[in-house]
Image (cartoon, rainbow, N blue to C red; front, side):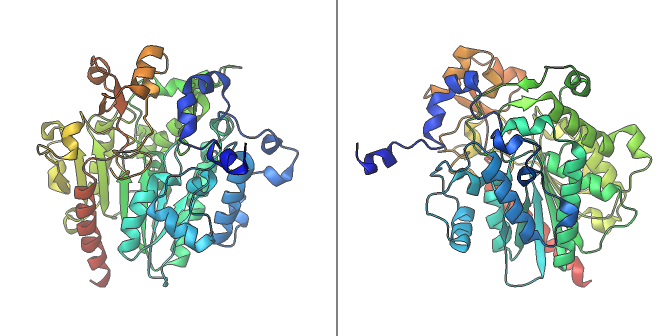
Length: 448
């Protein structure tokens, strides 16, 4: 076999998707590199955020962590986003990405220090979940920064020993470094990323006036599963590690999920919404842009809406009306007074539009464009973990030409046809339009 033939046959992030059955059994991508996991080797210890002198130093160290610990770091991944093209030009990378380059936290810098947005991903995710939205913000004139939460970007086993205090430390560094570097700052979070932003702000009696607005996509408030609080107790049982075991073929998001991680995110949410936290937390007059789905099966959307309403009531009426809620669901399920404290938008689905092909919007779909080469309409990846214990349905979800798309509700899972969990936002273009208006409304306040 010639060298050229070897190169063509090389395994990549797309071809491994065909091997999902054996990967579930072997756990090949479930565990970090053994050498990288040895505590004796200081080369592989975590990032010391308090000793970092710049965001660029952080980005370099985080990238090296991925290269050292991720068992697929150097694997080719022929999924080229606009964000990757921009980063490849800056860093002199190949036209074909490696997984490490798609997972790494990044900065898209403008030639000024005027305004920036910091984006924080969710539990089991990576900065790849912001490759699409980063282009929107960059085109609006923002420097875009993303953060890789500790325990992410490598393999699911990294979450077995990662605690929520490490996420708090990372978020604090990223927020405060960005506030130090730029004159106007927005903060954006997906799921757990949103909870970390709320947690940071709620611990402050006063916040930096440079913060002009918050973007929250499916923010974590309370788990949809009423038994989520038990995770910390199950995690304490020796040799009981995994809540879910899957193939881990999604290069950008862990599919296997440990009890310990569930316990940690539950702790963060408790700091934000529990009754005990409510007495001491500080609510601030910062405009919100929130995107949620009524049918979210990861987070209890009703609880999120209560939190949003409480946040809004801490603001003057002139500030309230700058805030926006996009709600994918039934308008009648919204709290009756929510429209009094913010602008509420409930998109309607017109025939022959993208939304007409989906049952409802999932927790994980809100930030991704339908054009995303991995998660979008034409992406090869299918999220089927909800069937992992039902081999026939799992394989049907992965392989059948005809599937349905939506959230993992009981009604959807009872459908005769296999269902993919929706991984893109069918209302993405409309969301960007509203985000543009929000930025205009909140930035105009800077000169008032």
